[in-house]
Image 1 (cartoon, rainbow, N blue to C red):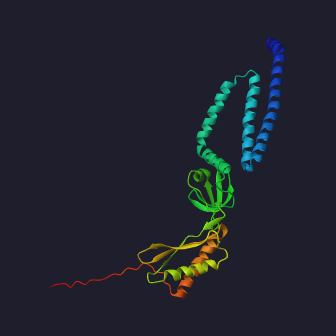
Image 2 (cartoon, rainbow, N blue to C red; image 1 turned 90 degrees about the vertical axis):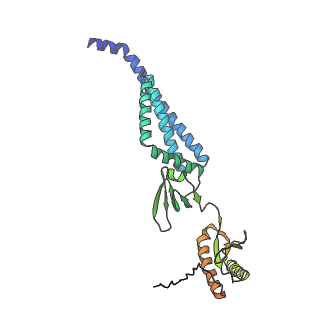
Image 3 (tube, one colour; image 1 turned 45 degrees about the horizontal axis):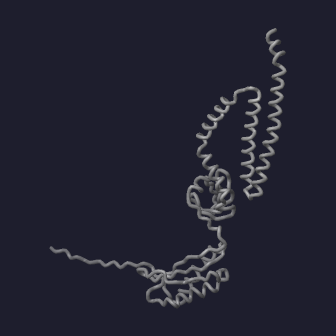
Length: 272
């Protein structure tokens, strides 16, 4: 007991000073880490980075800086932090291997947010699914289909394949093919189609719509019909053109052929 009292009396002041220094390092370091994290978030916001990514990167940077501060405080106490860092590294590696799929989705989510191949409200085809984007998360993207089904697509599946963003551009071309009979008048059919197109105010004048002969098929002369519309009018205009042109063709006696096959039966009389 006397030896313990002597050791404390001899070393207590030094320990108190070291503990005070460690506490001071932690308090000051924590304040600096928070300030640096806020400065980073402010710079990201000025550059137009998505708020979700700003918050996440800010929290991650603060956590990393705080770990560095804790290690510095522990080191000031005379504790060897090399072994501690080795343990933390091994633990981080184990966690990374266990969560490699989640980390892959996270990395893909960061790429989506940074490069912005689509935004909320866009209609896209990606990850083997098509729908309207409702939410872009760090691990998955939420969409809904035209019949209002919810889809949750992992971000790695989106960024790892082709992305078709139907809503990215303000205008779209409607591509239709109408087949008429070989005995029908091509000029008359073209005039009928153009009259339907010109009567629809949703169809743009520039670029000008085009009606051309696309193919001399086996049973029909195929006409390519290609008007341009605003992206939001694509499906209504397409449906109306199909209906109205068909009705106009019927009224004008222009046929829309369909493949036919003639079968001839040859009777072989049995010989007896």
